[in-house]
Image (cartoon, rainbow, N blue to C red; front, top):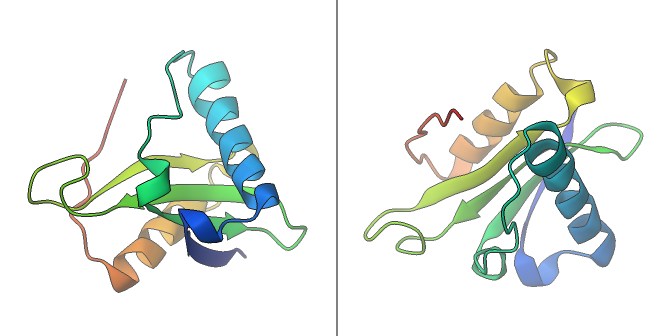
Length: 112
């Protein structure tokens, strides 16, 4: 079971920000071998949805970008990630359900 919290960038603690960046780098840069600049300047204007397990480990994450930040006239989501240890547990589905509860954005699937 995951416990979710959603914070605007300025409300993130340093520990939360570190956990977010570590998870994003673990999956996107190391595991998926996608060396890109993760700090793209959009985090500071976005909401961050975090899913923790009972041990306090960040297992699921996405950022919610306001209208117009990435696409003119549209809100969007980005950096959707689940920890390797959480794959196959439904953590990603729970993350998307939580995201949709307050902001029914259309979800676009990305592949690489």
